Amino acid sequence: MTTLQQTAAPPAEKSGGAGKRLPLRRLRPGNRRDLALFWFAVPGLAALLLFHYIPLLGNVIAFQDYQPYIGIMHSPWTGFDNFDVVFDGNEQFLRALSNTLQLTLIQVVFVFPVPIALALALNSLVSERLKKWVQNVLYLPHFLSWVVIVALFQQMLGQTGMLNLFLQSHDLGTWNIIGNPDTFKALLTFQVIWKDAGWGTILFLAALSRVDNNLYEASAMDGASRLRQTWHVTLPALRSLVILLLILRLGDALSVGFEQILLQQTAVGLQDSEVLDTYVFNNGLVGGQWGVAAAVGLVKGVVGVVLVLGANKIAHLFGEEGVYRS
Image (tube, rainbow, N blue to C red; front, side, top):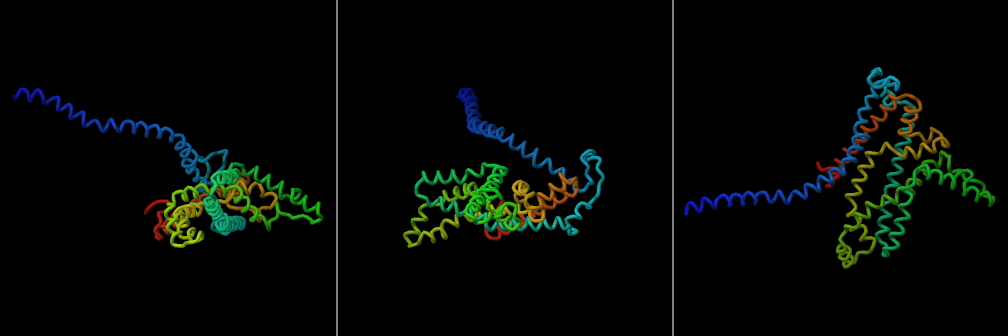
């Protein structure tokens, strides 16, 4: 009997060992799948590292009298002298900062709510075919470059554009829009809305698709009108997303339409069109003041980080997660 038990024991151990390895076998397909996804992510991670993180080392230029022909290693150090343009009240810098803040405020007030309103309007459409057609029309301008968009606006609203040709043919004079400093900020705002508002509705439509229809039915049974359903059901569902996007917008508050403005700057003039991004371009790449341009860019980045962290902290105080949890 003992001999039989001893001879039967080894198969039992093998069976138990095999049983312990079963979960590993079940995990192997998942591991292979995760490994495949990782390799797909590698090009994106490499691009992020190469074009976003490694260039951060170039901020050392802000503390040098950098000259491209001798390089970073041999350019003389100047300490914080390049930051004098930021903290000593340089007139050109203050003008660029003022224009940047004005455009940021205008875009937050007038541009940011437009995708929300478009998403609410599209979500209320009953016909799916009509909804898809409207979405395609609204998304199309996003895929056009700023070069094309600025050219289109010049053809429509320029001094010899279609609008002025129509006004002249009816003896109504001309209306100077392109190149007019008084209408420049309004023109920029309208261009941004036309180009990006439709694309911005995607996130809000995705959030609206997750709202439970039973909430609308329950509120309708309680006598709530369509407007009250929007106020008490739809908008609360968008609150977290709106706060998140506002925080991210604050982090980008000092960056407004570099390419868009640069293409129209000659017609308007620096006095009314210079922003921080074009200031860095005009003084660094064009003017050769590499250290000053790098100092302005570095300060702008630090301020953006502070704004994101501060806004995220405020979001936590109101019970929202924000960009990250505390």
